[in-house]
Image 1 (tube, rainbow, N blue to C red):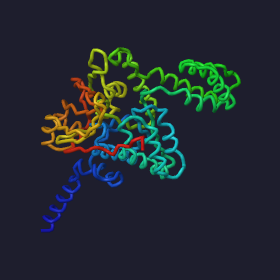
Image 2: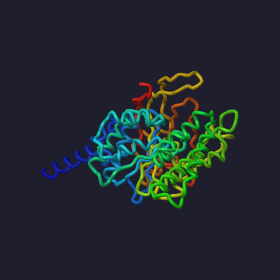
Image 3: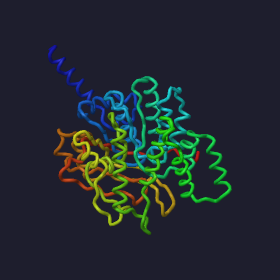
Image 4: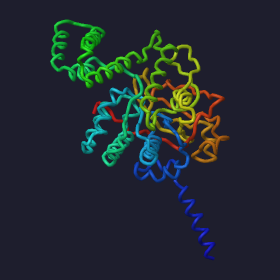
Length: 404
């Protein structure tokens, strides 16, 4: 009788430990979800992983953002990941990163402002992502010897002249800034001429007498100027990018990821960027088949890159922007047939255990902008994901407007 009771107890315990489905986990605050995340993925994290890609199925999906940020928090707290990489301009993340790394007390109003007004990529300006940033600040204050950094790895927009002046010219020689300002005030110079004036001033510094601090600042300035050269600019009347320009941009992003992942790093982006495979986009001239960012990272890192993606099998109510109609509306979107079929078997799948189920699985990747979805294409030589989490339903995230 005792043995029977023990067996029943152990069975019930096992069922309890496995009972939390991904949908339920997404309803919990980050700290409360960590134990569930550990039970779910703790044994699925590959040793030696250098870059851990986390993919969002949609720009503003509340449930996947809550789940993915809890997953990222688990990787930081229990797996030793020390960098969070965003497909945002790094110059827009620096003030936020500086605050997170500082000894300043937690001020949620400061974080709200830095997220709301500092970041520009839509899926980063949400209440759900802000809660993750608050969690990182708390973590850093509690773990001063294991500070987690947040960095941008993309080139979405050019760094303006005034940023370069304030962060380099003024820092090196505060008396030089008024002279430049007076010069620009008296004459109507173009933006390109203003950039050149800053470049000329930097080049006028005597390398033989500069301090190591100044040399370091100039090195950062050079990287920022290179960033500006990598920003994608349409070169056709229909506002499309050339393949060569996109390849140059993508090479830059890959290099930024590798540079900022000297320790273990989390790459937080969309499914279409994280998946190991190919894609087609109407934004590129002739709509060619191109490798995803995840595939490029896999080529560089081999088995040290992981891709954990999300999808949904039921329905989603998500905000979609129609640029032509100049409106944003919440639309009802149905999960794909492949997701519905997979959901019949469960809500979480991992390699290598579930390879038969996910070796040809193409996840959804829903853009905020109507008509901007990319077409994902399998690479027959690669497994597209290392794990997939299926949600039954999705709702819209809390969008932080910068107009409030």
